[in-house]
Image (cartoon, rainbow, N blue to C red; front, side, top):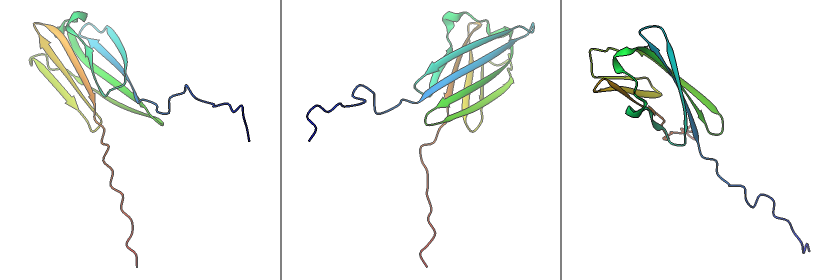
Length: 127
């Protein structure tokens, strides 16, 4: 019998929260670029807020890459041109949704990672 046992990992959490790394690159009409990087533990984020004071009418196109760190790393990307005649531009593929909104000529941008936690497992019939 061991009297003085040592418990290893007492303070180490037994779960690891999923992390989302958002990398947004804005390309402006004059050719300059601005990179915005954020890390979050939930799959939606306001990438650009109105207090960042980015002029909506100066953006030409964007590209975004999101890396999801869980038990491995999955990366998703999306890029497109903005239609500045619209007050809202939304883009999506099977993994990402991003929206650019014009609020009094100031840009607001939100991004959402589309993940499905529903899996169907089929087994062959027993013959």
